Length: 464
Image (cartoon, rainbow, N blue to C red; front, side, top):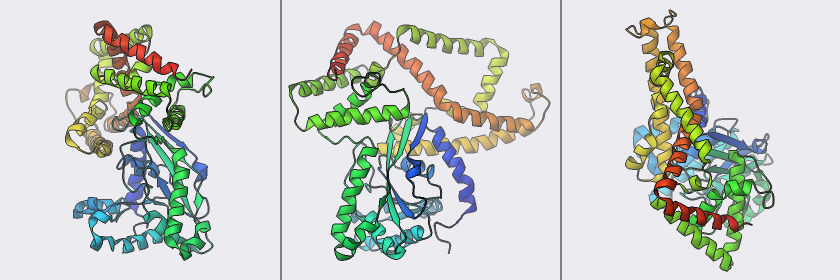
């Protein structure tokens, strides 16, 4: 029987497609610290865990060899699902809630995990052992470190490393958001081995502590739970202001990496003050809660208040969108080009994430299921439409250039262009809509919007 890490032709064929789909699922897919992945020695990739499938997919995009993952065993219950997960190089790991009888099965799983590392393939274990719906590092289990210690014994002098990896999503459920993968310096396991042989629990706790210390600075880790919502909101709404202010943190360009860094810095500063808050800090938290409440009342995202365009920019972008719509309606070449694009890649305009909110109870699974639905739909639909266009005959096919089945390849090209441009198109349209709505609310809900703006100015004053 083949080992789970062994070469698989079908997996190797599909993997680049999945990696491409993952990157297209985001506006920006930023990777920092790839040079920290060990060139010599086995290693365990240890990411933080705030989504179900999206962190493993992010890891798939950075690992030089196909990684093998460990996931909670309850999702392996159905034989079909188990076969699919095994094909995807995922092993089950049993938890206390699965019962003592099942916990004993972990011995075999740990043996398989050690074999993965001994064969030179990366092993990926989520550092916290469970997903978390907050930008907050949870306490870690011991399974990863037990595997690391036992593997290092078998490796002898050959090094084994644990690679802390921060993964940050600026939006958990909305497609075409941004993701940052921040790979830290590898932690060698060998220095813990003397303690591991003498007193394993102590060595495991030392490894847990050191990984937490290494991982926290690589992610957006809001430590203070009482003020979590306020600190998260402030890290978002003050982001542009702080990036443009040289006096506080230094002026930073507007990109996904710098926005992540600024969320970190704002949160760290507010976390530090939360331990011993003064009157000014308490007033800031109270104002932030009022700001959040007003945004909910007006059905606005807090960041739209902070980063809306001016009225001239809003009207200009609306005019461009309006012009494009008019061209689609009035110009036949533009209209047929648009409908051909829509025929080839309709998933662009289907808001599947809204359906996920109704169907999926656990919010950490919504983005993962949404990605899977959009990815599979795009692949299956793309194959069908390429065949239909290549082979079809009819009233509209007769009007196309006489190149016959090559139109199927044109359709595939349109699907590719649609996939790589989806984030820019959708986010551009959303931005225009949100900015129009902001100025419409300024007109229709003037008193509420004025109050919202006054509070926002109070929040900005805190960092002056």
